[in-house]
Image 1 (cartoon, rainbow, N blue to C red):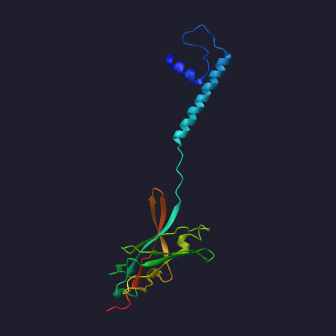
Image 2: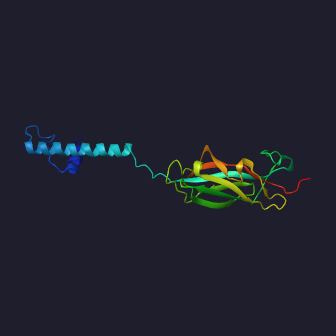
Length: 199
């Protein structure tokens, strides 16, 4: 106990109004005030440390990117003129475009993307801005159009999911999250081309 008192006195830099070995010595008012102030300072310090531990600093939120995904197919000859994809085959290397217009009907974003070997495209809208949170939202402002197919025997546009005018986006509550990346992913299509000649 006496060792604890010695350490405590050395940290607070004040003289105790009495020591455990002296029962006859009367405490002084000045020493009592200093002790009270030091104890108050220590209590405040402990309180601040407790608050800081209970409320650690939150990490800076990651900016949310916007992306559009979908598939591109070669429609079966027997289904031309319909929206059916029965018997369709995915097209690798097909090109699609994402075009967005703001609430003033001005093109605010345009970029061409290419499908992977599975016919899938993931179009991240880098640099896309929303001056108006509703009218310029991707669901309102953006559409996806098929542009070209690398298949010479399946390169004519279809209007599947209104692809010719531009397929609207859908929100399927999908997010992609990484260590330094967070994206809201919208869907479009699927889109399709069809053969020029069918037997």
